[in-house]
Image 1: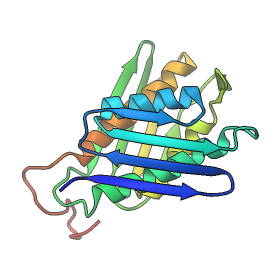
Image 2: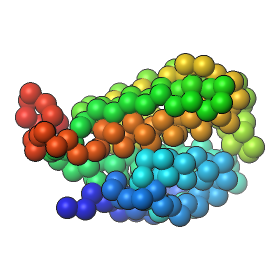
Image 3: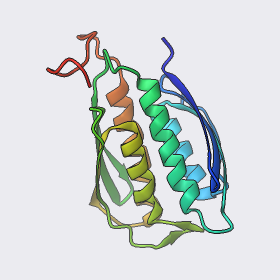
Length: 195
């Protein structure tokens, strides 16, 4: 069965249309109105082999907070929908990603219980026109709406662009591992029998 999701969400602050295919080829069409954020999501799609189509119309005349956070909400919902009952998947995923001087660890558990741990200190307040404090808001929203444990940890820092990009790519690789088929089991990977 196709592990896909399509989500539409409209509020007074944002209008979002997102489609996700967990078993894709890393192809994306992304337009959020925030160039650096588009670049990060393209990297997430490419390195996780997720097909991602995303259009966001947000209140950018205020700032990019609602656009970024609400995209995280919708992406989290799409991940939860696409992964389904979680039978036959690995459940856990992790990756340590180098990007020049930067090294970032990401670990996920698709357990159904949201928990987010963010251990990164990004030195710059902005990358281009992007507020770097929104990285935490984005990943928090993804974690809570998808029902996953998500840990992001900076092992070595440096350039803010590199750190953020390493976080998105490490998340993509960890999520790809967690959603991958576990050939030794057709059931849910839990002694409880459900997640």
